[in-house]
Image 1 (tube, rainbow, N blue to C red):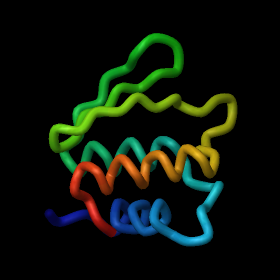
Image 2: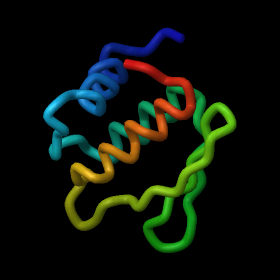
Image 3: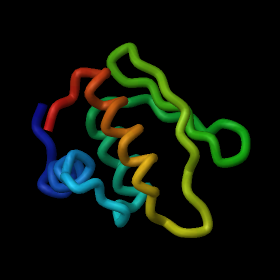
Length: 86
């Protein structure tokens, strides 16, 4: 799968060590869509994501646009389980 430069950068940021705390949710969501994920808004801030047979529910951050380190770890784990490697 061919990712744009922006999406490849976001993927690298998700898998960077130490875990980053400055990744914007909108960039993560854009990457997931580029990878072929189905994204549906749940109730409240819940976002349901399905990718390669794996499903997960994330909480869209608010009021700040960036996701916290624990959320980055969750996205990382979800991507690995869905067969996406950096």
